[in-house]
Image (cartoon, rainbow, N blue to C red; front, side):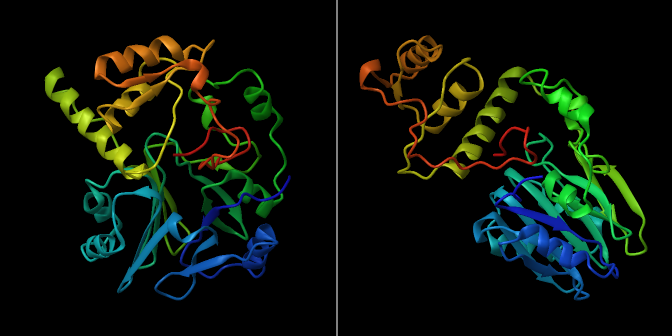
Amino acid sequence: MGAPPARWFVVLPDRDLAPGLLDGLRDTARPAVVRVVPHASGRPWLVGCWPDEELTACAIGDVRLAVAGTCSLEPAELTARARQISDTAHIEPVLSGAHGCFHVLASVAGHTYVRGSFSGQRRLYRAEAGGVTVCADQARVLARLTAAELDTAQLALRLTGDTVPHPLAWGALWRGVDAVLPGTALELAPGGEVRTRRWWRPPAAELPLGEAAAGLRAALERAVALRVRPDEVVGADLSGGMDSTSLCTAWCPRPSCAAPPRTTSGTNGRTACAATGALSQPGPRTPAWWPPDWPMRTHCAEPCSRPSC
């Protein structure tokens, strides 16, 4: 099944676990050492491997709240919002307005709540291990934990092309490991009950196009500013003129556009530069699209999935 991913987490319910489940997670992580964040009861809640900047957690009474990924909430603000939670139904309203791309993990009076991002970039999977339902952000971690067999039908789907059509793309590569669909949260009760519910729905189409465009631009600017430091040099392939071009022009009104020769990026890149009055560097002076010494800050939920934000 290969080596475990460099960063991952598993969410456990607030109930007694089968002997050996934690040992199995430690074996899954070897040679790395797992981190453990407990429920208010002292039982393990989050188990996994992650750098400090990947996951922010706080504890208030019998409430535990964490975000994993890129999130606008600083630790102090996350703690302040956690004070407003006394039931899992309060979690999403309390987190309203936070932007980024992140998992939400919570433990409230013995009830465990977990969800990914509605875009599906931050995925969530579930499986049965040791007689309980456990969740993880990486399908292969659950596969290793449960010794799951490869699902050859899912593998064949991923070999048919670059993009698997909806809803087939949300299946996991291993039998017994199931995806929690984007926009859906999983709740684990201390008695063993498991419930899924919608936490996100598209808003009503009420705004005029002009107002909606202004709101979209503001959201893009917040999203880009959250991910790129002011003095950091970043690059993007302006291949289609829609998503990457919008993000680049939102980050800086006058970016330095570089159009490598003999690529589909040239025309779109020059058009974007002309529209913003930005500087366009000649092609021969441009480095490769992704220089090998630039770090690639991505991680994948399973071997054949796209990187997460």
